[in-house]
Picture 1 (cartoon, rainbow, N blue to C red):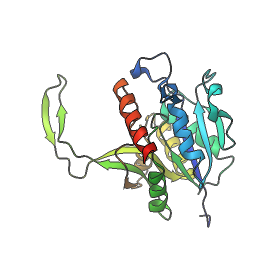
Picture 2 (spheres, one colour):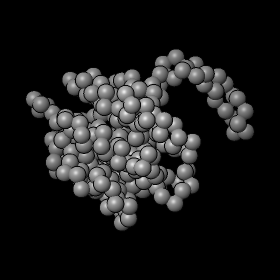
Picture 3 (cartoon, rainbow, N blue to C red):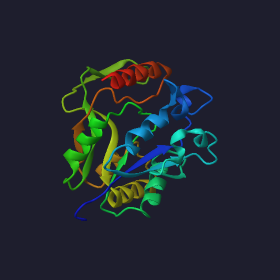
Picture 4 (tube, rainbow, N blue to C red):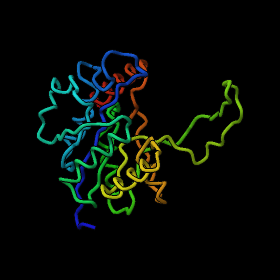
Amino acid sequence: MTASPKYWVMIPAAGTGARMQTELPKQYLKIRGKCILEYVLERFCTHPKIEAVVVALAENDPYWKDLTMATHDKIICTTGGTERCHSVLNGLKTLSTYAAPDDWVLVHDAARPCLHSSDIDHLLDELDDHPVGGLLALPVRDTIKRSDADDLVSETVNREGLWHALTPQMFRLGSLQRAITTALSEKLLVTDEAQAMERLGNKPVLVQGRPDNIKITHHSDLALAELFLSQQEAS
């Protein structure tokens, strides 16, 4: 491994946000006058340890050029894919022309605008010397129910040891690229980077993050994100 691996970021931002049922992809919806994706990019582009940020965009994306952050000197653009994992792999391939295989890459959702800089620092500090890497996550606090096909409770799941996976997820560039390539070759659409790494026998570290690092999925999330962003700005 390199003596001092660098830190890079990959943002898959080619999604349409179909569940939001809006004309704009959700990463371009605005909160407090700024696009969700701009909040995400600012978090990383202003961090002193981040070398650059690769953003995977939909082909012929008409919205990107209007973002203030689009011309930032830390940003590298590439074309995304059909699913999130395709976009991530495309981004990693692009990044491999700039970064070393043992450099760290942090993959973060384009629709998580409330990521706090302290969580980035915490993740980097916890995983700096780890051979595999890991991810931000939150221990499950609520009682968990499993349903049947009719949405009736089939069992109550023991929540001990269960965590909500968040992002960023941080792994070595070469290892992550190999893990996702292997999963796709086996026709498995992994839903996050940790899953791809786990399939090759790795055990990522769960690093507890802040609960305000929410993902925008439904309209109600916009108001909650606005509240969290206001609180962060005030503090």
